[in-house]
Length: 385
Image 1 (spheres, rainbow, N blue to C red):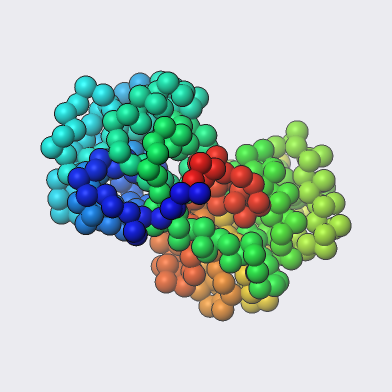
Image 2: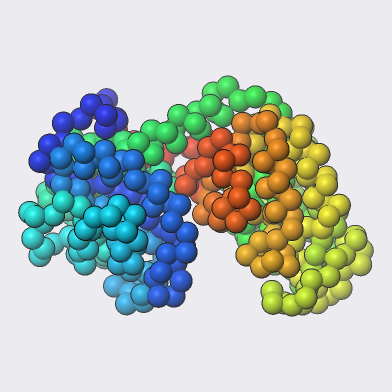
């Protein structure tokens, strides 16, 4: 096995390609709305610069179509943000090829997913890119579960490769949960769809003593309990699979915390209405948040937990009228003495919004990779190290 970490590497005058995670929230013009993931990448970038390497960064942003011209998918504004943060010039390259890279101290390539062959992990493209660099550094744990050119393809063709400091720290903290977690373990998994997290939900239920579903996922769990949810977001074709998750929880003695009241409206921009029970939900009502009774129940569970895994908000916290349950959860976590790990872009935004950054033991910039790793799955981007 290769030396996986950067601290002892000799990088002087070498060209170093760092796969970073700059998949940050942006507006329609590409302006950065939250720079947490950029800040998290700085230690590795600075270390390579201190070692006198020529540093080149590559990342994806969103899920664009190949060669999309939409500004929100360009990393140009991200390069400007990085330049301001570091107070140094950051060269921006529209492509890997046909550029003079010789005089670059720090550069950022355009969104990797705008390149044909990236998401297919095209091996010819991987080899062609690898020939441009001496060293590969993988520091994008959030993308470690994806087998793409810039996550796992390039690493197969560059002999000198290392894990970045962010990945090293991520693995160290997540291993604390996997190898010797303090019990009881509480998992909180929010999200709009069960279908995108079905295998992960299964693994998290097996891992945990308490399990709290949030968002649209919670709606499916409610349907599985024959609750009426009106016009709320759900996946009715996955009710059988959700019921199997409930049965799994029962067999593993994992207690699922169901909402007992909720906040509804007829649209995301509408006025909130508190429903004290699910019996009073109307056919046109859409659930956008948990109610105060549910928040108190969740606070009681948080007090019991010794290890907490949080991935995804409970309600539509971006809207003030539907943010209370996520706010109350954040407050409860800030008071807890448990070992707390939080992951995922929306979770990070909630942590920043409710100012509990210093109260979380470790904040993972990853989403799916965060949950996959805890679940014991192999991550393609880590296999060649």
